[in-house]
Image (cartoon, rainbow, N blue to C red):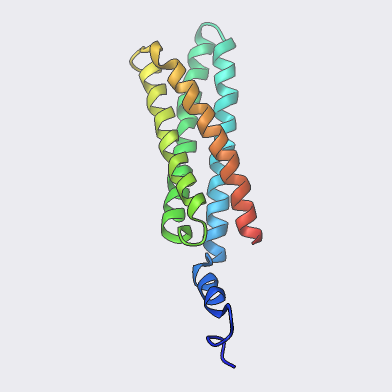
Length: 150
């Protein structure tokens, strides 16, 4: 009896057709891990410039702003890998990766409104975006590990 004639064979064939390559799963996991690391660096540096006074405050603010790029770049690359290589195997994870990048851009943008333009009224939005980014980073990291094992 051929595989096509077996009950459930089309399901097994379809599942094999949607499996993501090990390289794509690994790349996504690494990029998500790097982005998540920078989320935590962002939290650490924000707590430092909130406590600091004088020149030290400006130094920590600059470090905080610079490390945002360490979050944005791998988040963008992870979203691209998800859209290109994981969208069939992990559609929810793909959506989360794109939303993670978009929220990261929102966090970065509101941070620049605050630090560059002195628009402190954006602070609650910046904090909101940082909370969303943290939650999505953790979720994406956990799911990417499960995807790699699966």
